[in-house]
Length: 49
Image (cartoon, rainbow, N blue to C red; front, side, top):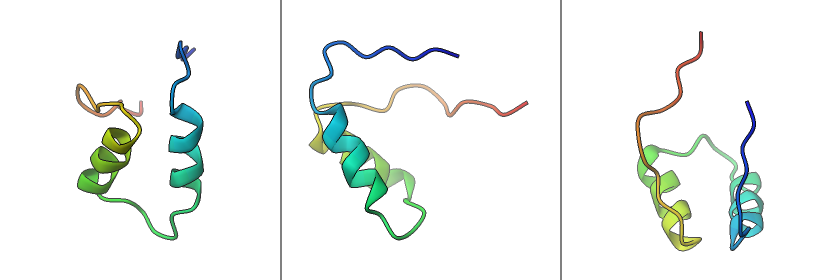
């Protein structure tokens, strides 16, 4: 799988925030972190086959 994000915007800050968490975030927490970085969660989670 290849993921491309252009422009990067606040993606780096998103990863910094996620890496500092000391627990498994809830969906609500993830949605807030996305929103704080001007992104939005869309679609269902990816399935692991």
